[in-house]
Image (cartoon, rainbow, N blue to C red):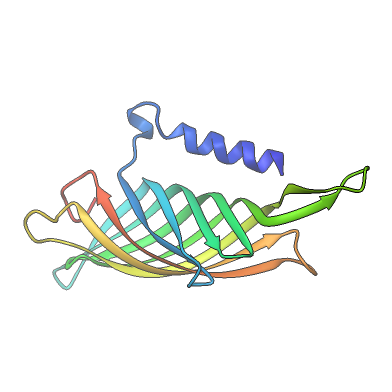
Length: 193
């Protein structure tokens, strides 16, 4: 688990250095663990590869992105969780700015359980910090729109349901269904990058 945490931190720190590692866009939005437990997701996006095709005079761009991401969520009376997860996304965007994507990720989940107590050697009750370290895998698919009107060309919005599987868990792992709703700020003006 310590290796996963270290790797995640290294990947997140790496994007700040040099022109080669500067992100193409940033995103932020609502991350709802089990949909209704509120949270936030922030990510930097790096375009690894893109290719444009013209079909019947319509331009289509396909790209592969790498995105180090940070999530946080709050499940009242149960747990608070923080996730560090590098993700790989395959994206297809059309001439009108509509896009769909498929994302895979793997990373680290740290949970904190509130109101946990233990009995010490003297028989006294004391409050303790409880939680779990877990390896997480993720699969999500979504769609969105890159705005093209003047003044909004740098923005897009997205809707992306996500399935997260955490290990270890009872009995073999824990599945989470989540919802991502958010906006992306693109550092380039063009619709097709």
